Amino acid sequence: MCKLPSPSTEGLIRLINMACAGPDRDLPGVVAMVVDKNGDQVFAHAAGQRGHGHDHLGVMQIDTLFWIASCTKLITGIACMQLVERGVLTLDDTEIVQRHCPELRHVRVLQPDGRLVEKQRDITLRMLLSHTAGFGYSFIDANLRDHNRPPGEAWEYGIGVDWAGFLLERVTGQTLHEYMQQHIFQPLRLIHISMVPNEANQAKMACMHQQDSNGQLYVRKEHPFQRSLAIGQNPNDSPSSFCFSGGAGCFSTAHDYCRILSTLLNSGTCPLTGTQLLSRETVDEMFRNQIPHLAPLNRKHMPAAKPELTTAATGGGGLTFLLSGGDTGRSIGTAQWTGLPNLRWWCDRENGLAGIFCAQILPFGDLKAFALAEEIERQVYAGLSEARRGRPC
Image (tube, rainbow, N blue to C red; front, side, top):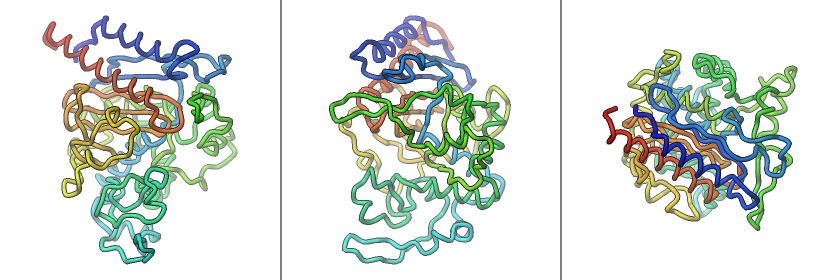
């Protein structure tokens, strides 16, 4: 791939620095990284402070650790698809889900009028990974406080990937944390990403910020995943009985996450270590639209205060993520997803480009964070396009 021209790199650095600078800064601190399918960094920059008003913690660094929240879902999906390749799991066998997760066998559907009715379809791993099993997050859709969706009948973002993680644990006899370490993180030689970050990695962690009703930022006293951090600080505290969230439980640096993304760009084989996590065919399946029979997701997506700052899922839904193009330069089949503290990643296999934008701000949907992430992506594509016009790549 072409190298990002120096003017483009310098412009991106100025853009990010300005967003994180001064007393009226838009954001306390962020890290952005973009890689190609060779695993090479196209762009990487850190700016701002690890903690607003906590200057003693120092500035953001490229190796700053973040709670990546729902960006975890992609990794859980990779883990489950490894087991599909080995014949331990299948995407469409309802019996294996019911045998290992009997709690899902008799799940009934609560109707708006209060009646409980039998579900018409049994739940499959494909449904769990494609957000069509009927589970949802009540903090996203108020209707889900009253009733869920019948399995297979609607796309509803929720806890399905957590159940996929529980299924993995029960068929392997390992915790999700142990499985990911053995079969994904260690083979890729990743030393920061974890569900229970150790003390050394926690010392590099960004603070979790909260925005109050007046738009003022402050550092939260307790982390949303405090239990994971407590286990990581105490080697004698066994995580075996801990509930690991396949939907939200990982902590990572931008670097480690981008190595996973570059592995997907390279059709399942890490371009830097040569390790094959998945076959090309399996990666193709993950990036295939799983829900062509359902209502287009560009008409049904998570609500946004400013819809123009969200990327419509014009390509449908893959396994754990959405598929969408957009005016940034990405291709129509690009995978994308976000994390609760305003993280955002994309993986464009057609153009061989992927990246992640990392912030630690609650609540989700910060307009300034999303606008910056989108502008970074746009300028990277524009810079590479300019480089290609200047010389063949």
